[in-house]
Length: 171
Ligand code: ADP
Image 1 (cartoon, helix red, strand yellow):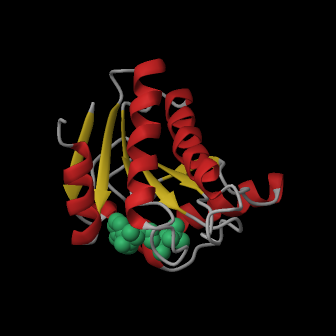
Image 2 (cartoon, protein in one colour):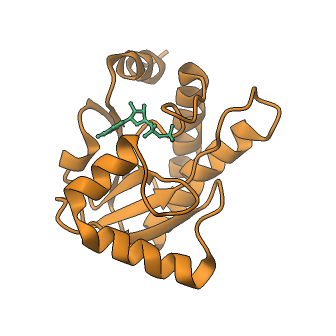
Image 3 (tube, helix red, strand yellow):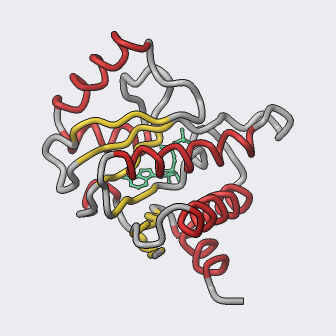
């Protein structure tokens, strides 16, 4: 099941919210900064432990931590690709970021998961292409793996929100 909202993802009461992290897992700007600020230092401590064990998170992969003080139970940190013009596997890596986050959710008995618009901020992925990939990846995962998982697309800016409204509308 897919839902769409325009909101700040740190306010969403899902089992898991997804963070558009960077490979260092040490926090950054944008949604990453907002999640660490609102969630408190427990999230960063958990990220540091993962870093010590596996040296960060490669692009397209996902790791899970506590959500600290947030209303969600978990934060799934995934690393979207930086857009370099489209010839560096950007589309496949963005798809992997969504699919590996969903896989991570299933493995941790998550029943509802909220996604921000991964890579569409400082990583500069074109918004419409990113929205198409996000929606297709999620729809295919739900159809193949778990139709009962609730997926919430959380758009922060109205441009993304309008794009998702249009792309999610029945044909
Ligand atoms: P990236 O480095 O993956 O591009 P950014 O955080 O710069 O990550 O941007 C990703 C998306 O997150 C952007 O569309 C931006 O508008 C959105 N965003 C920023 N802050 C929040 C927030 N608090 N909640 C939800 N989405 C947010």
